[in-house]
Picture 1 (cartoon, helix red, strand yellow):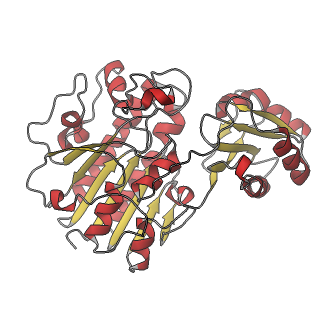
Picture 2 (cartoon, rainbow, N blue to C red):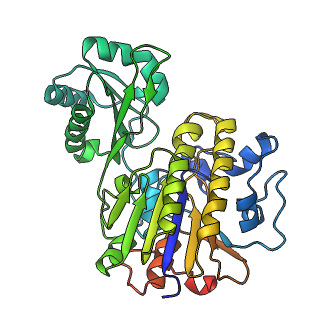
Picture 3 (tube, rainbow, N blue to C red):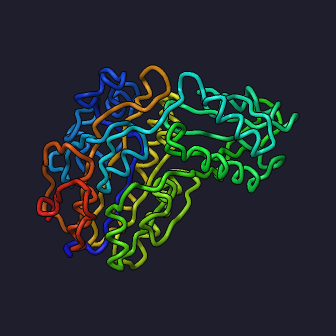
Length: 395
């Protein structure tokens, strides 16, 4: 065991340029981070810069580091898809060959809606692809006034249900989502996630989504690197929506985050604690608040806030710690539509014990992450997983 603790942080949706097959997914010349750097004046991410982000991917007005601190690499996704679950599952060794069902064009089938109405006792409104904030402005007053139920989807494989915390109540909303999850286990309706979307407010202009979101995800179809670590008696600690993405499988502890800034603060607090194993963090705000809403300024400012918190985390890392920064897909805020974008993602690996950083080239799978973590802790990856360890490159 070279590193006693590994901190893997996923900057949700921070792509760094189109995948070779991106046009098949409708994504042409997409580049989440590159286009943000082009559009944002005085864009400052000094900690990412010194790790080597601009060495990895050319960025406007952000020069390369003369001596990058991290080992850096571009990762390409081998699985079919460009969603959160596919990206994270591949990181931990699963090759997803069959994309999850989407209902973007026409909403959910009448048969599914009818069964959901019968089971919940509420008439469903919405049933279309929409922005979460926009559908609240359109339909939340009606949901509250008439006791109806807002159901909607997006370009992702998701079924989302809105519920007012004050009039419907969280437990009722969660119960409806459990019903929806049961129904969408059928092959013809199988979505990757059912998401509870609680909100507060009574009138248009005052509706606000809360941090009590809950994802009901499919369990991974096989064991991952997380299972290997847990079975070996190591700590596998999650921060943010990692618990939801893996449905708790392979984790020994989970921590819910109120925001990406909070997630970084939680990760820093964990770095001050003694444990042996993995801390796996997802920072969702880049994607949920800014990427899908095509808000370049908001995304850039979120990155600057992250970079500031990254500096704090770097200051408390120990000699035998390893930090891995990566992403699960792209979500170019300058692109058309509101969907994720099929992109390469960064891999930045740093330890205070490293003598110097270096360019590790390009990998054809995100699964090098899980394989490297398993190799470090001397545990075997589960049978049927993919990925080759980079540990020797990181010593």
